[in-house]
Amino acid sequence: YVDHRLTVVRRRTAHRLGKRQDRLHLVEGLLLALVDIDEVIEIIRTSDDA
Image (tube, rainbow, N blue to C red; front, side, top):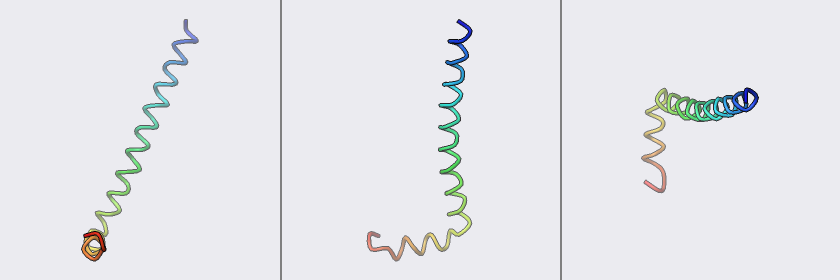
């Protein structure tokens, strides 16, 4: 029983960690865009799809 619970807790923790790391990656990207917001806006305005 204890081994099973340990496995469950490890899997759950690994899953949560993965989700948090994905979120961190997105937030870091947004922060980089925010630092150079003028350049980001210029790229969007001059893109062919805009």
